[in-house]
Image 1 (tube, rainbow, N blue to C red):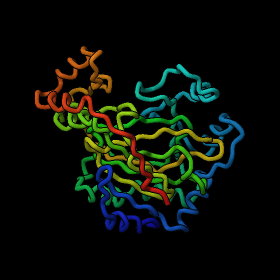
Image 2 (tube, one colour):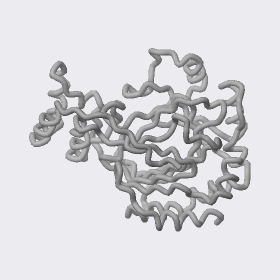
Image 3 (cartoon, one colour):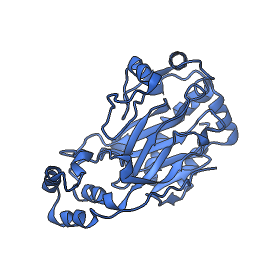
Image 4 (cartoon, rainbow, N blue to C red):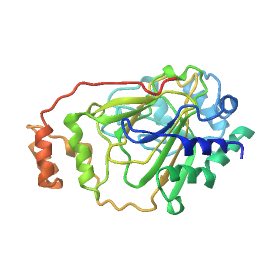
Length: 319
């Protein structure tokens, strides 16, 4: 298979540890392969005159609007919102300010993209990423594809739900200067005064993880480098987020994206971020959180409640 050399890169890559354990491969495809991929008609759609024209170009190229976290599926609603990005819009999540929409390529039109999709869906690729994390892929559900994320797409900081076993992201943006645009994945950690949320998840495995507000976390790295792969297995500290703010008429944020899923979820509930708010004027919320948290954890929360820490951002994944 054309892209089999990627298997060896995944097998030989060293784990990074900041801000959490992950594999990062900065130059995944050979230069020749990458140039052909981003030049393909499905990836490089050319400049568009309007949002309406962009949707028509994406549909004609084999893309379809999909259900995706943080997104809507109503094209007309997105067009109305994006015209003015009107304040007060009904956002898809209370921790977000975006109104995103994502499209997935459903059918390859060029040979290179057909070969790429065959590789992504091959048992060999799935086995390679699973092996690096000791994940048995035989009983898992696999989902992967080529996706475009339009302006306004946002997922606030979150570590992924417990049902997800593994996730990967590859930047295949068709613009040579894509690294300078504001649409890249942030890899984050909780600020010290909010780290009790991570501790809560670690001590309550029957409860699922949720999205949290941006200011609860700090960015440690951003995946800006084009042709870069990141793989991680979700844990209580694999916090990541995206907020896209860019001109998608010139080009669109484009990724190879995929997950391995456990077939069933064994969580019994999922407290929302509002349930973790601890302030003196929200005694009711504190009592609700106390109902979830064992006594030792309540002591941890009390100890960190008044701590403060500044924001630090380092862009590790630049060329």
